Length: 283
Image (cartoon, rainbow, N blue to C red; front, side):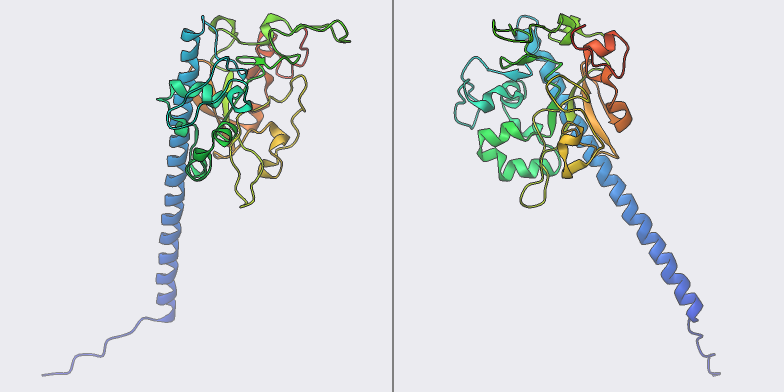
């Protein structure tokens, strides 16, 4: 028998080409996995936001046609399942999470998404106070539902005899009932939110978000994210550079920074006057 020809090995160029192809395939795989993970996170957050806005809209049916207050005294002792009673005089009873929980199968967990859900299981779930403070979505409580804490921007505010400012905001300042809204399909009720970074370098959510302009609160500056959540009213742009928002018509979408700076999406007055830079609160 004749000896077979010696097998020819790979050349250096061929080896480099194979390595390059493998690197490209791995890059595509990693990118695809990252996009899939991001899409799953957005879907999860959108689902939670949809549950939250649905619950909020239901509150009007149990409150003489008026939406749940954005912030204020609950008026009664709250008794969530698995937690101790919360007195109406306590600070965390004033925040929206515990007053909305009865409409969310008595479980606050849906208020937490992504890494925030891990935070809830590890920390917030053991404290009614922390649970009320750090949900993944903040409420636009100044303009929707109204503040009921006795300050000037409360719907029932009455200036004292010694008050230098005797002005009161007009009825269109707030959206207190379904019929009040000029553009419910654009009115932000909840937005993905963020608070200060904790000791572990992780940021949690926050129970309220403040609009670009509003009385008694700072105006938005450049977005600084977790370094300075208050720079954009505690709104978090963590979803492809945008925030997940729940609107007054029950829909959920993602808005980019420029869209979020439009006052017509926050203020009923701004929508009424068709003024995206509105700040004339007493008109």
